[in-house]
Length: 148
Image (cartoon, rainbow, N blue to C red; front, side, top):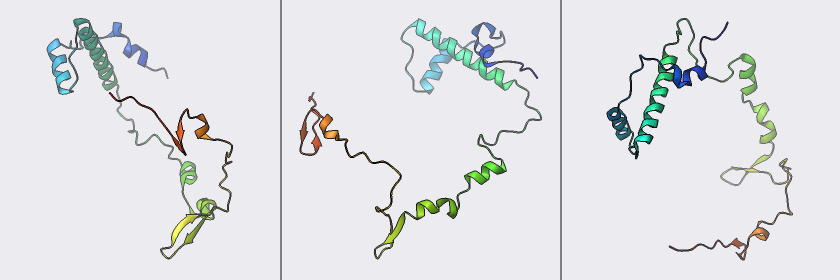
């Protein structure tokens, strides 16, 4: 089955239909005021805005004219197969590795990560961010700014 149109053909300004209404200067200024956007400063800028708006409206009208009778509406983009649902299911077994790294401490029974277990991250002890700074005071980096 061949597609009946392409996005490129819809964006081509030469194909724009004569049935598409022309956007007037008054309509453009009204839309800009409603959108709280600044009015164009030159007539060239205004003609570019009108041309852009007309091409966007042509694109939307072309999309709206596509016959969608008999098609199921898209409910979501994610994979909703049984296999995907099983992969995305969160269970105690899938969390057990992380739960084993925690312990309950104190009278209020706070959960705290155990430090004696490896976190899986390789720690870099050689990096000293203060060595890169041009000026420091103690363990702080000094950023000089000018007051206006």
